[in-house]
Length: 193
Length: 188
Image (tube, rainbow over all chains, first blue to last red):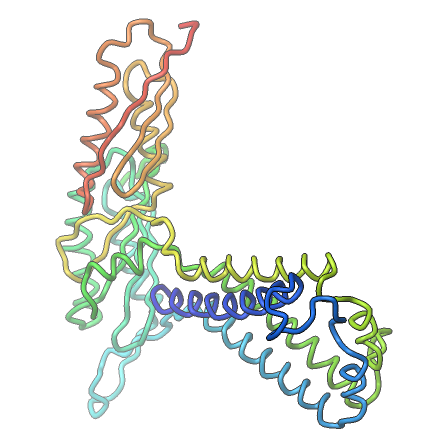
């Protein structure tokens, strides 16, 4: 997700936008008789009689159109998939050196441990975590809901120095790039932890 | 790994434009699939729909470039195109206020909506304030509070310092300026 998805979404939007802008703009220019020498007469029909007869006389037109439409559909589906892919890591590989065997840990187990730890901190009501990217070098998306009156400085220090440090140790990683979202919530449902 | 500042800017603060992207992609995919089916049926000379492909171009022969309908459609298409280009280019308003972090690998932020609501509740906790609303931006926080008290001396300052203290405790990358507007409601 995140940066990569944003780039894909934005690049696609710009591309499609430019095509629509160019097409619509050209049609508009022709209709307003802006450059008759280049674009043709404003009063002309959208398609001439000869143009409408063209596909009937040339067998390749419809198959070519079908192929072009199919390519557009495939590209659009690829774009759709690239934007909606969650990119979540399901299994983590703990032993990067394959000669020593492969150790696989379900990502749920790792994220479950860190959310349990976070939720045990006073002041934190809820926590959720997902690992994304590659199983060998995952990134962490962490979201915590904090009571309004909790001290944010203490909580952040604990999250960074304890919870994340524990996760790094457990996953045998030197660093886990983390995006931490802190939400606030009124302290109605106070934890007994 | 890119610098922390660019990660702040890219991952946290700016909208990703996934929603318009997915919408446009879905429309395009649907159009491509329908177009392909139509073209295949035309190639096989077996029209699938009532639309006879042989003179699908019939209406196009009787519509002219300077017809109102043509101009309207062209303008609409160009406008949609412009909107999409702008959606792709404009960074958009940040979704989260970035906080300072003690750890290079951690990017921390508070979603603006959450911060807004939290700051509104904070002001409402101030003695004498009935209701409050907050607006949170990167560099400025505006708080609008309502009171029924007749004597509002010092009340604005109380709200201001409460909000300021909370923001300072959050330790944002850029400490926003705090503005408080106090309104007195009759009948207190």
